[in-house]
Image (tube, rainbow, N blue to C red; front, side):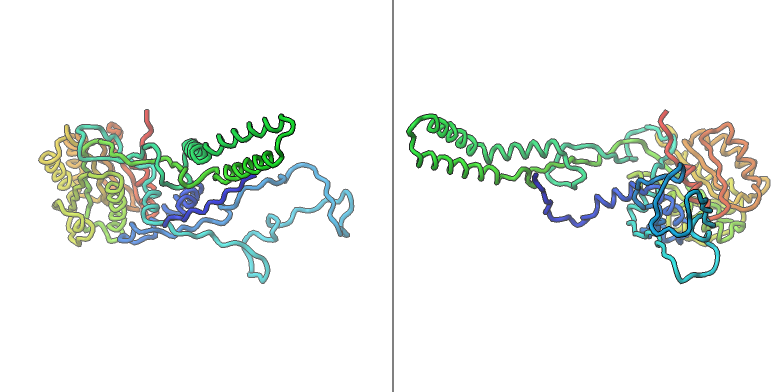
Length: 423
C-alpha cells in the first residue's frame, strides 16, 4: 500500500476550499444571520463584513443512534434500585431537570454559539443571493453586462477542489513512461538473457548472479519513480466572461417631506442603499437616477440623495413628472429597460394622489419593465397607497410593499427582486 503526503506549500488563502465548503454547508443559517444583521447595522456600515454566530447544535456532525421507540433489554451494572418489570418515570423537563427557567446553578455545562467572520464580498454575496432585475429584455446589446462562470479547459495551477483527476493521471502515466521506459526495456532484455542461461546446462554461475543483480538494480530505479508528482497535477480552469444583456436605468424616488420623520427616512435610506449595492455589484454598467422630492422634485447625485437635510411639504406627482421628463429626454423606452423604486410614507396632498395614479397609468407604467412602491409607515394605508392599489391588479409589473419597521426592510427587498423562475 502506498501513502501519499501532500507537501505543497499552501497559498495565501490556504483555507479557501474548506471555507467555501463550510459556507455552502451552512448556507441557510448564514443567510439568516446575514439578513438579521441588516437591521442592526448603521446606514453607513452596510458594506463591511460581518461576525456570524451559528448555534452550536446546528454544526454538529450527524451520528447514528437508537431511536426513542421500541422495546429493549439492557443490563445496567451496579443496579440496586430496580427489578425486572419496574416502570421508570420520564424525567421532568425533558430529561435535563428543567426547561431553561429557574435559579443559577454551580453545576452543568454547555456550548457557546460558533462565531466566525465573513468578508465584505462573502457578506454581499449572501445578501444578494438569487436576486435579479425582473423582466430584463435585450433591447440593445451594450452598456449592461453580466458575468457568468464558464469552463476554460485545464491549467497547471489551482486549488485541490478543482483537480482534474483523469488529466492528472494521464500526465502521471506519460511522465512515468518517459522516465522508466528505457529501464523497462533493458530489464526485459536482461530477463530474457537470464532465462536462456538458466535453461542452458553448465551456464556460468557468476554471469547469472551478475544478471540478477543488474535486474534488481533496474527494478529499484523503476520503483523509485513516484506514481504522481506536482508536475502532473492538472486543474479545471474557470473564467468569467461578460454576457451582453441590455441597457437599463433605475429611477430612485424618495420622499423627504416634513411628514417623513428621521426614523422613516433612515428606513428609506436603508432600502435604497441595499438597492444601490445590489445594482452596482450585480451589473457592471447600469444608470441610476436619484430623485428627491417634497413639494418640488430635483435630480441629485448619490451623496445628496442619501445625506441632504432638505425638507418641505408633500406633492408626490412632482417626482413622477420629473421622472417622465428625464425618461423621455435621455432613456427612450425602445432602447432602455426602465425600472423605478419609489419610497414614501404615503402622506400626500389629497388632490394630488389621483394625479399620481393617472401619471403612473398613462405615462410611466407603459414604459417601465418594473415599478415598485414601498410605503414606510406603521399607520393605516394612506391615500397614495389606495390610488396605487387600484393599478396593481391590472399591471403585473407594478408591485406594492409595506414596511412597518427596520426588520421588514430586507424581507421586502428580497420579495421585490427575487429571481424569476424560467418558464
